[in-house]
Length: 214
Length: 178
Image 1: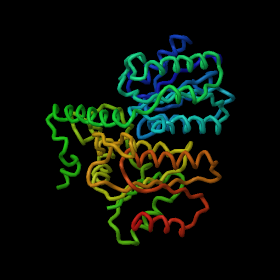
Image 2: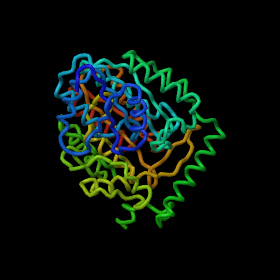
Image 3: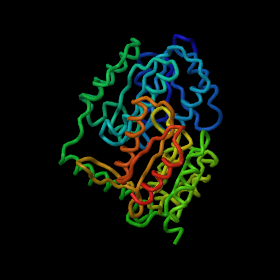
Image 4: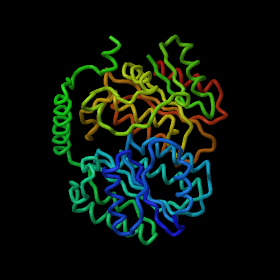
């Protein structure tokens, strides 16, 4: 990778999910290549690519309130290898819950990685309700009217190499109100239970590991 | 039962905490995450559908999940890494979805989920020297968000590499009797 290039790194184990879709939206503007985080084997080659990029954009899903373990492993390997000198770093994290605070830790994690390893943190984008998209275009997002222009502004920051403020994603997404929260809880639980029943399981049964121990 | 999962690659706080908890005659299981072979979660979705409540990846996590499923307290011990946990511990966290309750509930006006069983207490112990205020706040916020999403009780602790056994014993008391 040429030092002037932008590296688009997908930190999801799923290659056709929302994390990839968001990077492909950036790719349409910057023309950069999307690189996928390998789920097995050494991360050495990928660290070398990171060292050689001028700008790194990491997009990943939110697992238990931050990025998946394999990305943390990459960041630990990159910190151990060193060799960074001012590379610009942007982050994107998307998760199922509609609250920014649920997913915010991912960006803080990247910011700390950047600050401790001589990269230049440029900000990021938190996308709530991202899992519902399941790779479908951002125009299908429930807050599309505010989220689409905000994310496109985020892309313009990446293309220009300028910092992206957190107010971009904070102002584009507001949490659902009391009634909508109740509707979501019932609807999503209905869909989850329907899926579990479809596979022949009782959603109210004790966990499989507990039943195995009885 | 109390389950302690620790990354002991950079220190022996996990074994020290396990020793302190065992002094109270509480039933205890301790796993060293860095000594386990645990693959990353690949988001296959099987644990919330086809094999509901069971992870299909066959590795050492199959020893850990039955213990977590029935525990009254889970304690994760990790070096503080970029304001979070190490990848050894994060792999364990990601794979815990199999013993989570995929249904939604509301707590303090927000959507949350829960864990299987009767509910558990959830603790994190972070180890780090000269941590910045941002690192400390990030570690505590990660625990707080985890606790909310799991509908669990519990708290996070941060110790420096110079902390002695007395600090460990105090945390053990909090976990066992708190």
